[in-house]
Amino acid sequence: MAANAGVSQEQADRLGRDLTPVGAIAAGSADGHIPAWVGGDDFPQALKDFKRQDLEDIRSVINGLDIRAEVEQALSAADQGDFASASTTLRAIIDKLPEPQRALAKVAEKQIASAAEPLFTITSDNYQEHADKLTLGHQAMFERYDSYKMHIYPGIRNAFYPDEIYAATKANATRARLEGTDGVKDAKLGFPFPIPTSGAEVIWNHKLKFRGSAVRRVNDQAIVKPDGDFKITKIVENVKFRYANLQSPPPDDNSLMAYYLQEVISPPRVAGQLILVHETADQSSSGRAAWIFNPGLGRVNRAPDVGYDNPSVGTDGEQFNDQVDVFNGSLDRYNWTLVGKREVYIPYNAYLMSMPVLRYRDMLHGRHFNQALARYELHRVWVVEANLREGLRHQIAKRVFYVDEDSWSIAAVANYDGRGQLWKVQEAHLITAPFVPTVTGVPEIIYDLQSQRYFVTALLNEGEIPDWEASFQDSFFSPASLKRHARTR
Image (cartoon, rainbow, N blue to C red; front, side, top):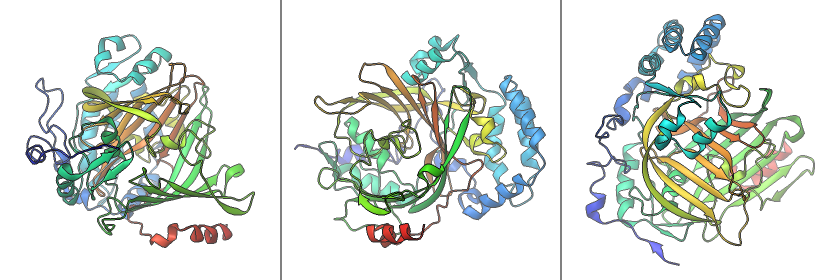
């Protein structure tokens, strides 16, 4: 099968010049609506040096403050469109933090200042005036829900990664290639395709982006009914990244992308279930290997169905396995088209949405998320279309991806069913985590336009801070270790 070759050295030399080190257009837009890329310069060094305990200390202090009345006042003001009052209240809350926790205010101040005055608000009454800068999914949300709003804020292009990733990305630009849709060859550490020539290459940049060396996350998830009723599902996710691992780089001949171990804590009917996944960066050969422990059966089995449109555990079918991390797994069931680059409003700099002052009931409203808390900015995105291949099966027949040019993170997806109807709308509310550094969605949302339910994952407000300082031996992710872990449950 033919492989897409890397770009010329002349093209690669643009990285770090007119292109950012990962391939985005460094300059702002001619009309000034999109600013120039600033990357890590947007964050003070003190915040880049944060440890997990620093964030836990902030959470502990905030949780000890008697501020519920102020929070409800700010939420009420924001819901009425009075963002200036809401921002004033939020600033007063942060001012109550003692040193050194007030380091948070250094990064929050820019967010709070701009949040006081959104540029404008898009509603169901005026969304057609902005359709050229809306994703297909967001247009559908306005058509489905008259209460849906998008508050548009000034853009801040602060996505950044380690210098080692930048150097590796430039080296990959001329040598990395993609065989078919799933065979990444000759790529190491960095983004494999910073100057992409195909839709599949764009998606692989998302899949192989730097996320740190390992993470342990207690992931709170919710299925929200049309009336606003919801229940929290809790899972523990242990991940060791093998591809872009700066602490322990894999050998050149190792195609493993990541190890993933999931344990379901709640709800009780599926609690205790364990799933182990070995994910590869070359799925054209061996592909994904997975094992599952079902406490009802009491044994570990190979799990061939952990992928594609099989439902994720505890999601009642509202999230498929390949929608974890917005999209993951094999690309082989679709034909991929690189539509091009567009300027689109996407969720970005969503720091306020993850603050511990908010309770889940503040955020999870009926029909859609509390949009008074959501921040949208104008960014350049790569648009990629995936259409189901003839003769193959998947409940999603067509997907349209919107991928942030600065981070290669998928920010939004419009998903169509087999009848050609827009069915599910995905959003990743992106933030830059400067202490890793990486860009991630906190939270991620899947709206089901047919059932009018929606699924939310990566909720942090009432849970634990992810441990990006976690360290695992490879043996922790072996099937034998899974069996030992299961016996201790």
